[in-house]
Image 1 (cartoon, rainbow over the protein chains, first blue to last red):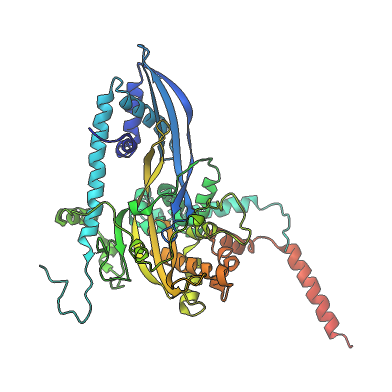
Image 2: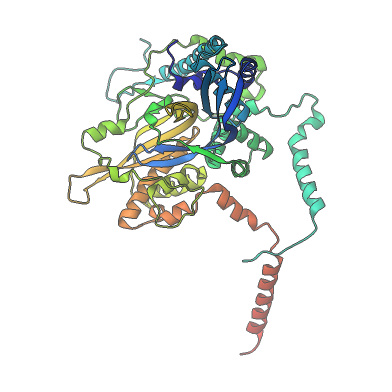
Length: 155
Length: 370
């Protein structure tokens, strides 16, 4: 799988939080989890570059949860992981940080995280496909009144 | 104006809350099949109402917006108020870097400036060309028929080969030298209206942020005054787009920008009357910009018109209310204005008693011979 790390969160969050929390708990049963920054839920501020002059401004806020962790195995190997996710759920951020660390360092259980990411990618692709269908189904070519062709013809 | 301290009324206030709750659930009195509104049903079937509340509440939390709509019995001002109250309890963790909306995953994209635009026009979900006739068949919609509609639409819709993102119409006009150039001087720090008071004159970023969470009707009313004649923006919609914007934040370990989720937004860019550059350069179109959380095109268009009107007012002085930053920005917030209107319902016994005394005295004096 060639998915870049920056796209893992989108793929993983295509699954319910309960699934992610359960897998993170299961895979960390045999390792030490040190929290580098506490799991917390709060708000993020969305900065947009306006489309007219490309000036930055704040469109508003969104729920944001974040966490970063360091995992250590009995053999001394360590892995760092972190997550920031649009959700009001600190536990989810912790689970995502753990899964991020496990997959990045190929810790035991990484293949199960990979499966979740791969199936998440498919779910996201399905959603993207439905959005493209909305666009394609409503593509329009307005014709001027003096134009004889009729774009409503079924061709 | 002054308030008066009162005591008592606790039982009546609790009773008022109970009565409101009684009315919310009264359907169950005579109907054994009555069910509470599901949050998911509000999210999906009243999506424009949810969009309005996330936008006016200033927080993109559709689920809590749906909850706020449910508890406020559909009152958008109260719902936005509840959402803002919730946000005030949350710590601010982070801010995104300025995000580029060309990355939006679109569901709608139109231009009224050109018949054809690069990438094409897609109407998406819109009532623009629909007849505004009541669909009486929805009065008694069966659950089975309801569930079949979306499935049938998906089954009958062919797969589409379309790009993930589309170029901006404004970029094409700018490349032709028809729009003012983007200058580095404009790239200043954005103004945070949730942390700093609005003290005039304000930077444009404060105006954009204020309008982005303004009440739709207020924004529309002032923009409409400009459209009808108390102003001369005369806009053409260069592009209106609706879609999901990936929200990027630095990864806590690598620092690389990572997608934390996505938000639905509406964005509108208008081209307005051209004017000569300040330093005697060639004439160019003027432009206005509007955007908000959720799918709310009237709000984004109104904001774009007012952005242009305010730019003009700040440059040349306000010739009408819609060009006056103080007039516009201090009167478009729904929670502010609703709060002020509602406060008149609270006890004003002392101030009114004073008014009564003064009127009686004045009447007495006017009745006395001079």
